[in-house]
Length: 267
Ligand code: HPA
Picture 1 (cartoon, rainbow, N blue to C red):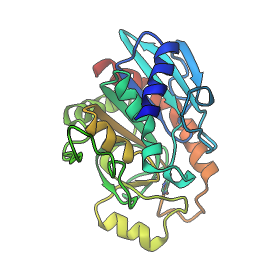
Picture 2 (cartoon, helix red, strand yellow):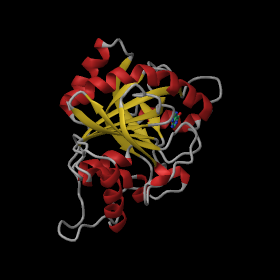
Picture 3 (cartoon, rainbow, N blue to C red):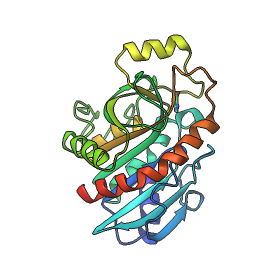
Picture 4 (cartoon, rainbow, N blue to C red):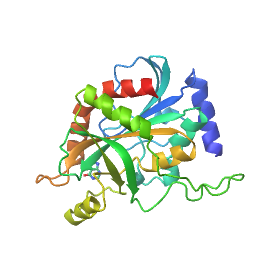
């Protein structure tokens, strides 16, 4: 918690006025919102105690932007469990954002399609998740006053904002689905048997990130919106590679910008 305090103080000193919304841009999606007027920016390396992303396709920058009336913090890049960070490390930025006054967050990611109707380049509004990472960011996060955080996750993704997200996507002619996101640790992609298992378990898409973040965001009382960019299908014949994931994400990032604008205005 001391580290959270120091990071909060550092960011609050450099990035003013304070933001009440945030967006996390995942693999290949860093280019979305590049049209926003950036008021101030910090590289992750400059922020005390902030982890540094080692994954290509992540810019590693925190920008303070204005969208209409709203002040928004945009995180270009996140930290992954498969990089060797603990769940606490992966969700450190969420705790920092909450302490900075952020009350609503949009989480984006790259995901593999398990639902056979999903094609690379499609989007999926996340309406629920399966945490299959084998760990939970709230383990050990005991609050001296409140005790163990038994967080209710049944409506983790804000139901009203899911509806709005789908409507906005349709209006923008984005290829959109809504579905369940499974999260695994990675970094290996799924075997055929694992993909079949996940699909039969009710997952529509699978990722190696994101899911720890709404868990902590809900503990902090934030409103959460989740959007996956389907970068590959688990049923495709050709090999799946990180560079393909980043390439599809980079193209999709352009289409994502207007959706993010519209959603931020509604939050
Ligand atoms: N599996 C897991 N995570 C992913 C995938 C995938 O196929 N594509 C993008 N992130």
